[in-house]
Length: 165
Image (cartoon, rainbow, N blue to C red; front, side, top):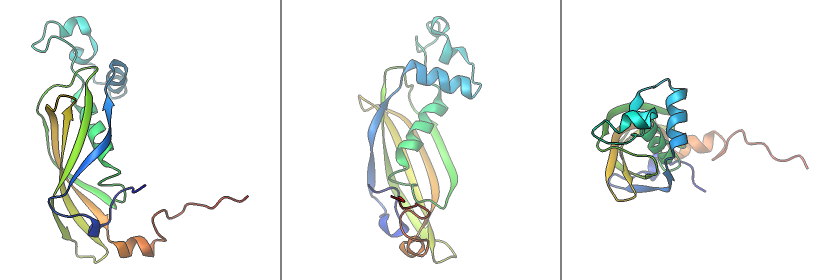
């Protein structure tokens, strides 16, 4: 299974459809809110949420972003040397408990750095629900190795031991 890409494997205009999707549960949302100390009642209090424009609990936006970022790792940043920048992050529509999120990333640009063994890839990730509604978009820059860098480090899985028996 491929985990990330080298600089040479990225093509401007390529679209990576991340799989599988993730159905967001009330538990997921509440646990993330509690872990990050975001206690806004829109996310945690179902009774309060009935008094809002949405009429029900809304999944906290940072959880939506985190899921989409995680979904993109095997396709985009699995071999990354560094995640350099989140240029923009937009929450376009709400996500509710029970929605299933899917993501896809488009390669917008790429360029080599001053070092010949790495480059910077500029991508945009879109997250959307089961009905196709886009809920979140973000653009980021990732520093990735060249094929030569990976070979010099010992291949795809440096540091992985062999079984003794």
